[in-house]
Amino acid sequence: MALAAEPPAALRRTPHGGFGRELAGALTVGLSVLAIVVLVFQILAWIRDVPGPGAAMVGGHLGAAVLAVLVQRVADRATGWLAAVAAVAVVVITGTTMWLLWWA
Image (cartoon, rainbow, N blue to C red; front, side):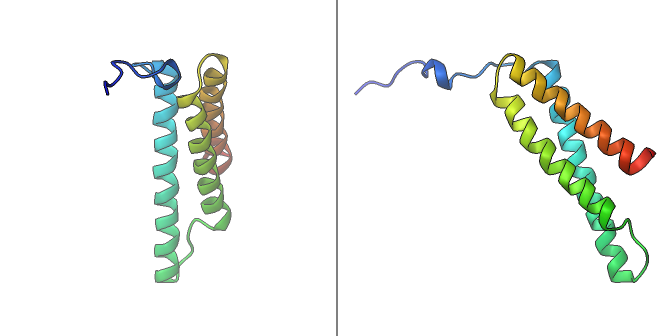
């Protein structure tokens, strides 16, 4: 039994994600790390019995990070306009999170 030299077209992936996907991926990783940091600070605040970031800040970051990861999965696996819309959605999610939880 011989193995096929190339995978079927449905399983082939493009070697380059493109700048938009890479930017969206970097923003997703950054948002996820920030969510973990905020969660750790809240846990440390509970342990030391001092005010921490608060439930809204922690929940907002965790929710935004989960949403960004899910949308980034779409951007990584889709092609064409759907991938572009998903990458832009990650940028919007990150910008909205920064605006509402840090800058406003």
